[in-house]
Image (cartoon, rainbow, N blue to C red; front, top):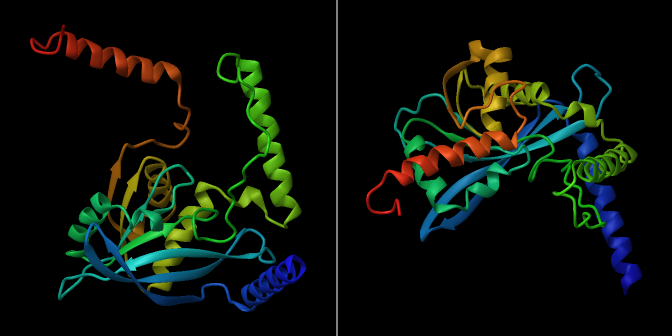
Length: 257
């Protein structure tokens, strides 16, 4: 039984790869979806778009971007709004199941279609570049800088080797190519311009979209903005924020004590 099951899995994977190869660059297709979030029913579409993995290499793989489209509630919808989530690594399509986010998206639907894009390598987009090491981190990983660096370098190399062995061009998974993905999505949707809403790393990507495709954007909202080369998360930054918060709390007559 186990042997039959393994054979079926391999066969399905092979058919899936074959279907992927038959797709064309720029091809887009949709399927209807229904969901209930916070007691409210929603209807939408799951979209798929084929793009080139490495645009500098016309022979590189075709990869699949997956997104959810929530159609506008307006009689005269404006430009679509694309939501870019953070991480990088967070799935925007999964956020469609969170009530607070959906309430915000409902307001945006009053303006135009809302697109929740799983960026390349993330979520339902394929390939998904999630890699889980089987080895636990050392118990002193956060107590010793060298231990931490060695542990994370080792796991990064394992992940890189794993995906390279699968034929993935890992150097193509970057903010520039992702910005081009957003514009290719605009073209595939036949939209003159897009609105963008970016959160955390999504702001980093949003700024890259402005840099490379600004003329094709209408309005951009960035929340928790981090610019190019600003991604380092220094402990001193968090420490300073905690000190400022502590100073505010200490002055409060009710909770200061």
